[in-house]
Length: 225
Image (tube, rainbow, N blue to C red):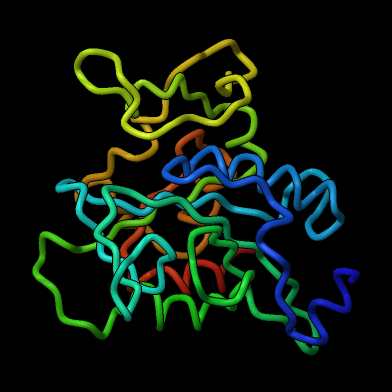
Protein backbone atom coordinates (compact mmCIF):
# COMPACT_ATOMS: atom_id res chain seq x y z
CA UNK A 1 0.00 0.00 0.00
CA UNK A 2 1.37 3.41 -0.91
CA UNK A 3 1.26 6.48 1.31
CA UNK A 4 -1.47 8.05 -0.82
CA UNK A 5 -3.57 4.89 -0.57
CA UNK A 6 -3.15 4.94 3.20
CA UNK A 7 -4.42 8.51 3.37
CA UNK A 8 -7.41 7.90 1.10
CA UNK A 9 -8.55 4.63 2.61
CA UNK A 10 -7.80 5.46 6.23
CA UNK A 11 -6.28 2.00 6.58
CA UNK A 12 -3.79 1.00 9.23
CA UNK A 13 -0.35 -0.48 8.82
CA UNK A 14 0.52 -3.83 10.34
CA UNK A 15 2.44 -2.92 13.48
CA UNK A 16 4.43 -6.16 13.21
CA UNK A 17 6.22 -4.63 10.18
CA UNK A 18 8.07 -2.34 12.60
CA UNK A 19 10.64 -3.27 15.22
CA UNK A 20 9.30 -3.28 18.76
CA UNK A 21 10.89 -4.25 22.08
CA UNK A 22 8.48 -4.08 25.05
CA UNK A 23 9.31 -1.33 27.59
CA UNK A 24 11.87 0.36 25.30
CA UNK A 25 9.46 2.85 23.73
CA UNK A 26 12.09 5.54 23.17
CA UNK A 27 14.26 3.19 21.11
CA UNK A 28 11.21 1.80 19.31
CA UNK A 29 10.23 5.32 18.22
CA UNK A 30 13.82 6.15 17.23
CA UNK A 31 13.79 3.17 14.85
CA UNK A 32 10.22 3.90 13.77
CA UNK A 33 11.14 7.40 12.58
CA UNK A 34 13.92 5.97 10.46
CA UNK A 35 11.76 3.21 9.06
CA UNK A 36 8.85 5.51 8.16
CA UNK A 37 11.28 7.46 6.01
CA UNK A 38 12.78 4.34 4.49
CA UNK A 39 9.36 2.94 3.60
CA UNK A 40 8.31 6.25 2.02
CA UNK A 41 5.52 6.78 4.55
CA UNK A 42 7.22 9.90 5.85
CA UNK A 43 9.69 12.37 4.41
CA UNK A 44 13.08 10.73 3.77
CA UNK A 45 14.72 13.11 6.27
CA UNK A 46 11.87 12.60 8.79
CA UNK A 47 11.14 16.33 8.67
CA UNK A 48 7.40 15.74 9.01
CA UNK A 49 7.84 13.63 12.16
CA UNK A 50 7.94 14.66 15.81
CA UNK A 51 8.99 12.52 18.78
CA UNK A 52 6.78 13.08 21.81
CA UNK A 53 7.78 12.12 25.37
CA UNK A 54 4.83 11.99 27.78
CA UNK A 55 5.57 12.18 31.50
CA UNK A 56 5.39 14.33 34.66
CA UNK A 57 7.30 14.93 37.89
CA UNK A 58 5.72 11.93 39.64
CA UNK A 59 6.46 9.62 36.70
CA UNK A 60 2.80 8.54 36.75
CA UNK A 61 0.83 9.10 33.55
CA UNK A 62 -2.44 7.30 32.76
CA UNK A 63 -2.94 6.31 29.12
CA UNK A 64 -5.79 4.23 27.72
CA UNK A 65 -5.88 1.60 24.96
CA UNK A 66 -2.43 0.26 25.77
CA UNK A 67 -1.59 -3.31 24.78
CA UNK A 68 0.32 -3.87 28.02
CA UNK A 69 -2.86 -3.45 30.07
CA UNK A 70 -4.83 -6.35 31.51
CA UNK A 71 -7.97 -4.21 31.84
CA UNK A 72 -10.83 -3.93 29.37
CA UNK A 73 -10.28 -0.18 28.96
CA UNK A 74 -6.58 -0.72 28.29
CA UNK A 75 -5.39 1.77 30.89
CA UNK A 76 -1.74 1.71 31.99
CA UNK A 77 0.00 4.00 34.47
CA UNK A 78 3.33 4.51 32.71
CA UNK A 79 6.33 6.31 34.20
CA UNK A 80 6.78 7.81 30.74
CA UNK A 81 5.76 6.94 27.22
CA UNK A 82 7.04 7.90 23.77
CA UNK A 83 5.06 8.25 20.55
CA UNK A 84 5.60 9.71 17.08
CA UNK A 85 3.32 12.34 15.56
CA UNK A 86 3.36 12.91 11.82
CA UNK A 87 2.46 16.37 10.58
CA UNK A 88 0.24 16.21 7.52
CA UNK A 89 -0.24 18.88 4.86
CA UNK A 90 -2.96 21.46 5.09
CA UNK A 91 -3.93 22.39 1.52
CA UNK A 92 -7.53 22.50 0.31
CA UNK A 93 -8.43 19.14 1.86
CA UNK A 94 -5.94 18.61 4.70
CA UNK A 95 -5.35 15.16 6.16
CA UNK A 96 -5.39 14.75 9.93
CA UNK A 97 -2.10 14.64 11.79
CA UNK A 98 -1.26 11.04 12.68
CA UNK A 99 -0.07 9.37 15.87
CA UNK A 100 2.20 6.33 15.57
CA UNK A 101 2.04 4.47 18.91
CA UNK A 102 3.50 0.97 18.72
CA UNK A 103 2.01 0.11 22.14
CA UNK A 104 -1.55 1.19 21.37
CA UNK A 105 -4.53 -0.97 20.44
CA UNK A 106 -6.00 1.88 18.39
CA UNK A 107 -5.43 2.00 14.61
CA UNK A 108 -1.80 2.33 13.58
CA UNK A 109 -1.45 5.16 12.78
CA UNK A 110 -4.32 6.94 14.51
CA UNK A 111 -5.63 10.46 13.76
CA UNK A 112 -4.37 12.85 16.42
CA UNK A 113 -7.84 14.02 17.47
CA UNK A 114 -8.99 10.43 18.08
CA UNK A 115 -5.80 9.56 19.92
CA UNK A 116 -6.21 12.54 22.23
CA UNK A 117 -9.87 11.71 22.85
CA UNK A 118 -9.44 7.98 23.48
CA UNK A 119 -5.88 7.54 24.80
CA UNK A 120 -5.20 10.78 26.67
CA UNK A 121 -8.86 11.42 27.51
CA UNK A 122 -8.56 15.04 28.70
CA UNK A 123 -12.24 14.97 29.73
CA UNK A 124 -11.51 12.26 32.33
CA UNK A 125 -11.08 13.90 35.72
CA UNK A 126 -7.83 12.86 37.41
CA UNK A 127 -5.80 14.11 40.35
CA UNK A 128 -3.29 16.84 39.56
CA UNK A 129 -0.40 14.43 40.18
CA UNK A 130 -1.47 12.55 37.03
CA UNK A 131 -1.36 15.65 34.82
CA UNK A 132 0.49 14.76 31.62
CA UNK A 133 3.09 16.92 29.92
CA UNK A 134 4.42 16.49 26.40
CA UNK A 135 7.99 17.09 25.31
CA UNK A 136 7.90 17.54 21.55
CA UNK A 137 11.18 17.10 19.65
CA UNK A 138 11.62 17.40 15.89
CA UNK A 139 12.57 13.93 14.67
CA UNK A 140 15.70 14.97 12.68
CA UNK A 141 17.06 16.61 15.84
CA UNK A 142 16.17 13.56 17.92
CA UNK A 143 17.84 11.16 15.51
CA UNK A 144 21.07 13.16 15.70
CA UNK A 145 21.14 13.82 19.45
CA UNK A 146 19.43 10.97 21.32
CA UNK A 147 21.47 8.34 23.17
CA UNK A 148 20.70 5.59 25.65
CA UNK A 149 22.97 3.04 27.31
CA UNK A 150 19.85 1.44 28.90
CA UNK A 151 21.03 1.96 32.47
CA UNK A 152 17.46 2.84 33.51
CA UNK A 153 16.50 -0.77 32.80
CA UNK A 154 18.90 -2.28 35.35
CA UNK A 155 18.34 -2.82 39.06
CA UNK A 156 20.78 -1.86 41.81
CA UNK A 157 22.99 -4.93 41.21
CA UNK A 158 22.99 -4.65 37.42
CA UNK A 159 20.29 -7.16 36.48
CA UNK A 160 17.93 -6.34 33.64
CA UNK A 161 14.42 -5.29 34.69
CA UNK A 162 13.29 -6.01 31.12
CA UNK A 163 15.36 -7.72 28.48
CA UNK A 164 16.97 -5.19 26.09
CA UNK A 165 16.89 -5.19 22.30
CA UNK A 166 19.46 -7.38 20.59
CA UNK A 167 21.03 -4.50 18.65
CA UNK A 168 23.68 -2.23 20.17
CA UNK A 169 22.64 0.77 22.31
CA UNK A 170 21.96 4.02 20.45
CA UNK A 171 24.82 6.55 20.47
CA UNK A 172 24.35 10.21 19.45
CA UNK A 173 26.23 11.67 16.49
CA UNK A 174 28.55 13.57 18.84
CA UNK A 175 29.48 10.39 20.71
CA UNK A 176 27.17 10.89 23.70
CA UNK A 177 26.15 7.50 25.10
CA UNK A 178 23.43 8.49 27.57
CA UNK A 179 20.96 11.37 27.70
CA UNK A 180 17.58 9.63 27.88
CA UNK A 181 16.87 11.14 31.29
CA UNK A 182 17.09 14.62 29.80
CA UNK A 183 14.11 13.77 27.60
CA UNK A 184 11.81 11.99 30.05
CA UNK A 185 12.45 14.18 33.09
CA UNK A 186 9.60 16.67 32.74
CA UNK A 187 8.37 19.17 35.32
CA UNK A 188 5.33 21.40 35.29
CA UNK A 189 7.65 24.41 35.28
CA UNK A 190 9.14 23.22 31.98
CA UNK A 191 5.87 23.85 30.15
CA UNK A 192 6.12 26.59 27.54
CA UNK A 193 4.43 29.88 28.30
CA UNK A 194 4.81 31.32 24.82
CA UNK A 195 2.33 30.92 22.00
CA UNK A 196 2.26 30.68 18.24
CA UNK A 197 5.49 31.13 16.29
CA UNK A 198 7.67 31.54 19.38
CA UNK A 199 6.79 28.08 20.61
CA UNK A 200 6.78 26.27 17.27
CA UNK A 201 10.15 27.76 16.29
CA UNK A 202 11.76 26.25 19.40
CA UNK A 203 10.73 22.71 18.47
CA UNK A 204 12.90 22.97 15.34
CA UNK A 205 15.94 24.51 17.03
CA UNK A 206 16.28 23.03 20.54
CA UNK A 207 17.72 19.59 21.24
CA UNK A 208 15.07 18.91 23.86
CA UNK A 209 12.28 20.61 21.94
CA UNK A 210 9.43 22.19 23.87
CA UNK A 211 7.18 21.02 26.70
CA UNK A 212 3.46 21.67 26.51
CA UNK A 213 0.33 20.66 28.43
CA UNK A 214 -2.28 18.23 27.19
CA UNK A 215 -4.69 21.09 26.52
CA UNK A 216 -2.15 22.61 24.10
CA UNK A 217 -1.36 19.47 22.10
CA UNK A 218 -3.81 19.67 19.20
CA UNK A 219 -3.47 23.45 18.89
CA UNK A 220 0.31 23.16 18.83
CA UNK A 221 0.30 20.88 15.81
CA UNK A 222 -2.25 23.04 14.04
CA UNK A 223 0.23 25.93 14.24
CA UNK A 224 3.32 24.14 12.95
CA UNK A 225 4.14 25.53 9.49
